[in-house]
Length: 241
Image (cartoon, rainbow, N blue to C red; front, side):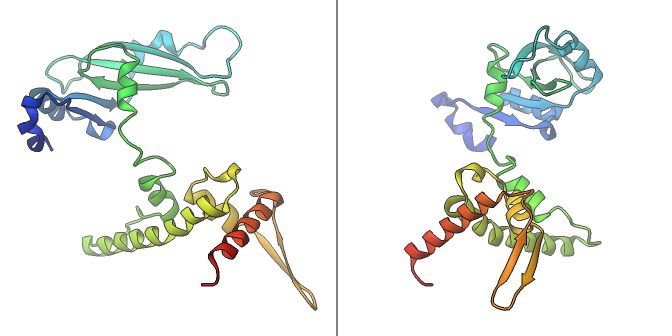
């Protein structure tokens, strides 16, 4: 990617890099700085970083507000594997129901206020969002279970998981777009699999009919009725298949 954008240096195109803690590599920092990239890479917390934001880790005085209280701080930090100190921005968030704050650290060479750096970092995409590709495959399909002893066997197993994910993602998106009421359209594939599909059910057989008694703990009866009405209405519009 760096070589691809080198011919466009004369166009003064903004070049930036965002990455999670897996990209916190000193050689990568030096490469991005040498190529003129503005980066924001997440750092794992350690006692030295937490000591820098110790005043922000104290609970704010007064009654907790409904909206999260967010505080920012920036400082210079140099790890043992770094050749020079770099700017680190910290974001500390207090939630109403949280006993402890959520603190994150980002190493960056960007200028500007500390609030602008997390905003730039948060635009790195939605591939790892719980409702989207990577985490849905990890949690709903379990494609990280590669317990075979050989690489080739694990490769085939991963391909089978990817095929199952593609086949399951279609019905899951169909449920979200067509069948699900507005209250539960935000559910992930894992939730759709566990709650509406794998809900505990008891089948009671009578002389003329069969009754399915379903637990209402996960999904209330009204939501099931709304789902069935939506599916029936869609079937009528689409016609016989």
